Image 1 (cartoon, rainbow, N blue to C red):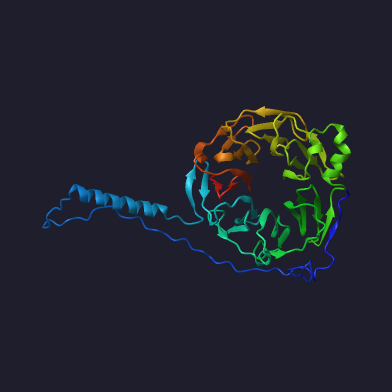
Image 2 (cartoon, rainbow, N blue to C red):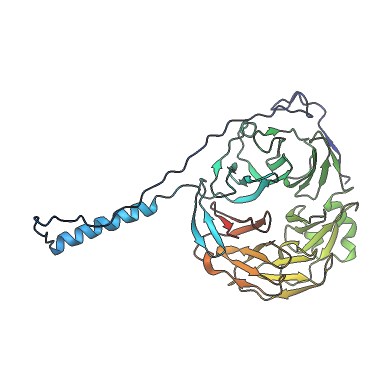
Length: 411
């Protein structure tokens, strides 16, 4: 099946109405600045008695009562935490407490390139948070154009290039800003869009690249008014054509990706929904190229190393690295201490240092390009799965998890 080009031909019947997609009406709501509250230290010293006052004797029952009251007061003070303040130091990371509802899964994070103090954090249950201090504190951000309909959006991906930013989510929604996120407008989408949008990358002025979970890749150069298909056929059509070439598990393909990751130079690697094979795509190729998995266990996730090679995670906690750089089906397993929990993502801080995160607070670190990994036990007591590792640069990084768990790299 050929991939259609998408065009918004009539915006008058779409809500919200946009008189011109080249200059959409960007709705905004002024942000309310929240000032942190400070609690002075409680003095635990006993008052001094004058020389004329007789000493006060306390019996055992009074002592127990006063001690219990003091313990309760200290516990009460320690429980008073600001909702989005960095509090708990965790080795190389610190936890940032967020004003989110229980059960929210954090999905993506991005900062304005010209102002790395200004960033946005996305998640399930229509979660958009904003920071203006580099990620130390976060406040909910309301975008009216994303609240007009009775949908509970899952915001999957965000990307900035200069002051231009893009957000995609499910059900199908596309948001755009040209003023570094001070205001966001909604861009209408064609009903012909195949699949749900799972990733977007800002590539230049008024330009972006968008990927759906069915493998469609679209590019725009006029702020989303037109989207041109970058591939000529769907993944299902490709597999029907190549199933006889020996791709194991292709006949069980359900039509969607489990994960998709993009390299800095525009190459993609995606894992099938069942994890029984993976696919790659490079700019200029007419379709996705399927590959047999090189390991017995099913694939959990794949991505790109800093040197251009691939990393591969399997279900059950295994980690593999491709031999050499570039695309290959030759991988070698690297021993890791995952305690049997699955590793879900890998993020590179530099050519040599990377972090891996996974279930039940698993955090692993390598300082030699992935040849060996050590476990950071500081997050073991956090009752959360850590889904994503994002490094904005070598000094700013975050780990995103479920239940609103956010870890910030201390640098």
